[in-house]
Image (cartoon, rainbow, N blue to C red; front, side, top):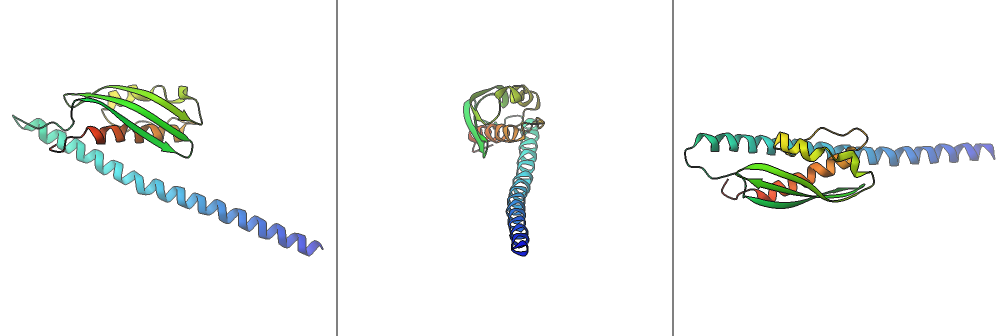
Amino acid sequence: MKKMDKKWVILCSTAIAAVYTAGFVTTESQANINQPNQHVENRFQTNSSTLNNSNVQTNSLYKDGTFTGTGMNRRGSIEVQVTINNDQITDVEISDFAMHYSESDVVGLPDEVLQNQSSQVQNVSGATYSTEAFQDAIQDALDQAQNAEG
């Protein structure tokens, strides 16, 4: 009977480790896939802005207006309103916060977007999922605001 118990313990432990590893690899792979795209896109936007500033008469990178973006992950969702005027982010508001954690964890991120003029913000320790969903929501709004000509 004891040999059977040990086999079950080993089998269950192995199964738990396999499930954990599969989840980690999937999450890590998805994070690595998403990261380079954000950096490439931001470099493209920076280069486009630089090119636009060097011309006498240019097309703007973004349309003026207020754009709604949504970011979500397994911990919930965030909706933001991003206002753009003359290719500058002039206002950012969190319009809906439905994350597992408290909104107070990310209350400073809209100011950081205004300062950086980008969706890229510093990760808030203890609120990584909320920070990532916020960044995705800002990028979603910026993607909607992007001029087709820009």
